[in-house]
Image 1 (tube, rainbow, N blue to C red):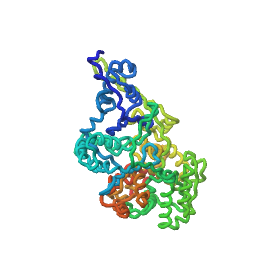
Image 2: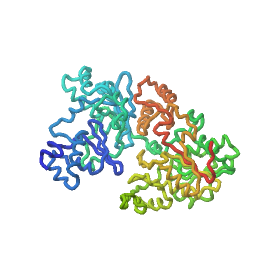
Image 3: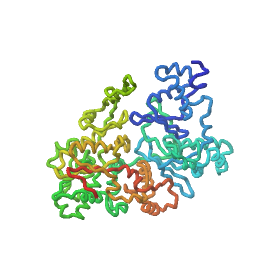
Image 4: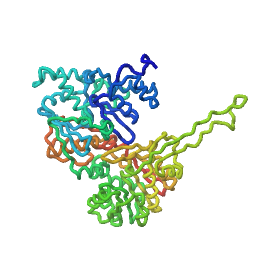
Length: 596
């Protein structure tokens, strides 16, 4: 190959404004000038780092020969140049910002009074345990107020030239520096778009994902380069630690059982636990006496509401009820004991949920597993599918009946005993991708439930997932969760001779799905909670309706629109930081299903 047909022209160098992040085997680049987020494999990270010094095409091909083909080098170099990860060494990268449009990120907490400084509250992405509070200067506050998703950077610069206190020269550089600090991965409150935000409303695929996404994963730039990249700073910035007790509870209480632990209008005045009791009792009459086991249980909010409802509506049954909570951690067990101190029928154990039969005595008429199974292990499995041979034809050109197309048997390689489980239950995996997660922990839990369930008993498993979608790995509040493949669980239940019923949780509990609710992410909720505390208020872990939350803002003395970027969505879409329509319920019994 000669220079005339080289995979790229001139020299390229790595942008000084990118940082790397990692989530498991996935790697990401975040661009600190534009807010681009690119997902890539580890070898592409190494490809980018090769350009830490200016490189020409010919030397790149020679250095990377055997790892990347010439065509791949050209393709990667051009794509990464388009995303400003690789640059012409002679080009000033900041100049590209001028024709772009700043767009405010989603899920922010911004106090924007009519007069005075703008203050931004965000969860610190690096520590996950601090709130970053940034009080903008008067000059930066004015710049922020003019960012409407429609005005280009070059036009903002012209506006800022007329602001009181602006220098006679250098305004362009000041604006670019201010914007870049707000876009930086430490802040992520602005992104730059090639088009005004309004143009995306009419596009088939909507807003580009990077404009409404954030990068929550671990920054690994220092481990890749051997040195950390500079952090962003503001004169009016504070890092405020989140109370340890609140941090501990954040993961445990981020569940529907807690958000609806008090009577709620969207449940017709019921609690989550009360509505669940009503649904279960309608499906299959509860026996007397009643032996209940809850596996997991979190902080105990659902169990407390369940027993409160039982005591109120069925006092004679409540008097003959035992409720055993089997927690997976001592901390959860302590919370449960405190929460259910008013129910003498409750008893508490802490242990391995994979050993229920070994440590529990007797059988149970009702086994509950509410918002717990996603925390159990999932195994990574690879499917190796044999190639399909071409059909043979006989001498007359017709297909041979003996040599027709035959599909070989798939082979699986997986972590732990996942392959054993696949063949033990003959799991239907024809639709699986080449690599997928298997809910091995949830399957083992079903085996344990089967062993402790009474002959006439029923079990209810509530979690996020889908009937036919393979598990998705998520990282929240420092923990890893996996959505459930309910189709696989129903298949295993059938093999265990259990009848299964699948439903949406909001349908089972009779949620009023159109109710407008405060919608947040987990990170935004933490920032919002800090803002309320700073204003002398309290924000509970509750599914607030729009009316309830706006009432809280009024109590704080906030004017209309003073707290920016607050969103409300129908309950079926989101309640606080949880996605309601993702929650499903699988009811298991040894009896035939009852249609309501």
